[in-house]
Structure formats: C-alpha cells, structure tokens
Length: 383
Image (cartoon, rainbow, N blue to C red):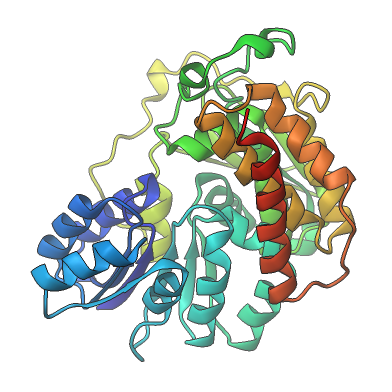
C-alpha cells in the first residue's frame, strides 16, 4: 500500500486523482489532502477516504471541520499545505495538484521527507527548478510528471538515451482562441476564453492555454525535468490532442505518445509507474480518426511563448516574475477587471521591468512573487 498526500484535492487534477486512487483501494491510502474553499467537497472526501489530516484555506472553515470530525488533524492556509505535504513519517507520494506558486514550498517539504513527487503543478519547477532538481538528487527521490505532455515525453524518452535526443516536441491544442486573429482577441469574453475545445480543465489553466503561456510553462518544466537543452525543446499546434508529446532521435526516428485526452491516463501512469494496468478508460478508435494535423507555433501570435524561452535562458528571478505576473493578470481577467490581451501586456511589462537576481533563494522567490502580485493588484483592482 502506498500513502498519498494530495495538494489541491478539489481542483480538476485533484478530483481525477481521487477517482484513480478510488479504483485502486488495494494499492493506495489517502493520508492527507488540502482544499481551499470547497468545504462541502472536503467533507465528501473525508467521509469516503477517511484521511488522517486535512488542510483548508481559512481558519474559520478549519474550526467548523474540527467540530464535525474530531478525530482528524486539521490545518489551514499556506502552513496547511506544508503540513499536508509533510504529514507523518511514513513514505508515499506527494501529488502536487495545487494551483500556482503555492506548490513550491510544500514540495520542498515533501522532498525532505524523502517522498516521491507526482507533479501536476507546473509553477513549482517554473519558479523553483534551480532549487527543486538538486534537492531531488540530494534526497534520492523520484519526480514524475502528471500532466499529459510531460508524461508523454517521459514515455518517449524510454526509447533511447538522452544524448541521442535531437529534439523534444510538446504539442498544444491551440486553446480557446486558436482560430482568432490578434484583432479578434480585443473583443473576446471570459466565457469564450473558458470554452476549451478539447480538455475539461480548471479556469486558470484554461486561460493559460488560451494565451499559450501554459506551453511556455511546459517548456520550462521540460527543461528541468529532462535536462534537455532549451533550444531542443519545441512546440507544435496539434488540434486533435491525440498526440501529447514526441521525441526525435539523432537517427531521424520520432517516438510519439498517443491517447484520448483524459487526464486520468497520465495520473494513473505516474501512480503505478512503471506498471501499466488494464483500465476502462476510453481508447483510441483509429478508424474514426480522419486527421492528425500539425501547425507551426507562431510566436508573434502567442508572444508569451517567446517570453518563456527568454526567461529560462536568463533564469534567476525572471521565471518567478513571469509566473507571478501571469497569476495576478489571469485573476484580474477572471474577475472582469481587465481584457484578455491585457494579460499579455502585464506579463511582458513585468518581465521587462524586473531587476534580475541570479540564483535566488526560496525567500527571494517568495518575496518577489508577493511583490509582483501586490504591485499589479494595486494598479488594476480599481479599474
């Protein structure tokens, strides 16, 4: 039996992780989990999985749950995420499915407990890759990706040696606005942005997909996860979302991973790695696939993708600025405070005006993350 410590249980990935582990009750035990504000869902999870420890977003909700579930240990806030990740002295997997940079410090806490990390939270490596990867090596833990693209690349890399790789190709559906021009984007609504053509995801990642910053995060994540030179990591628009990633080797061979767009597949692969179990998830019906299309990624159409390449080449604190500005801007967009294209403007301006810090510490990352978000919120919340 493997213990599971789950951050972000009420999000899209968190719920699908719970679905997967419920199918393998002979293999996994949910030891601890976190939610933010969805207390009704937290109660459902407590009653179904009987965890030992739970964290919520605020103190009042924690007090309410303590009364209702007196035999469970509770925590709240940022410390609560750390408590979930580091709960008990037993081994197991931390599943990091929390949104944003909040996943960084809890991940470090879990690594220091010598727990393997199953990572859905891209921002952890985007802002802290230079810190996380040496810790993974120091504590001799595994870091396995949960997101479909990096799970695909991981599987494709099993076909050869790293030094034989000529390039990695990360596919992108193109997001909600893949057929719109820059002029069209001036008038798009929040509802349109949240209507992803292929995937059922949370609000923030759906907007990130529409701006294509999500692919930028994935480029940075791939750079750290696989140790591949940044100039060998490419992206292509693949509208069908059937091929999730490809690796080209020096001899011209290309290995591609294909599956129906269902996040439970990469989640299950990470949880059971390297074993593949038979499941009832929908399979590809090749007779019904009429086309697998690929289009060059236009960096002028998606400027945040270009910025992603720029910040990872420079490194330092710039990836933190890149991510923090985006988190703040997407939050403002979802609150109808800014237009869609203003997300790009805010991120680009923040990166261009940032003073870099080479080899930032955790405290540097936390401080700059908070500073950037506060500056943006002060400027735009009144709009």
